Length: 135
Image (cartoon, rainbow, N blue to C red; front, side, top):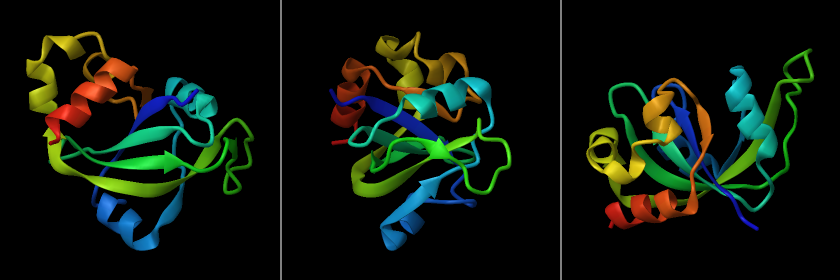
């Protein structure tokens, strides 16, 4: 069964545009314990929303997880894991954090409750709602 996720990145550090140009990348730099737990739960074939943090605060594209989690080769501590991802498609219209906050469907979601979390699950009903908002 496919799972859905949201991963965040500051666009000045790594943007969806850059991923589209590169086609694929290693999703790394996650050090928060809860975000690492979510990263360890990702599986090849899962999809994630690519969310730009910072000034933008919006979901901008869909990516596919193309590897199972593995230890980050740049880190001596093996608890830090990474996954390989590829661009799937840009959302027709970005979905902003303000739009999500205004919809009561999302009130208990980690994006609103734990705002600094960089990787989190997206329940299928919330995934579908975001995709619908992006059209």
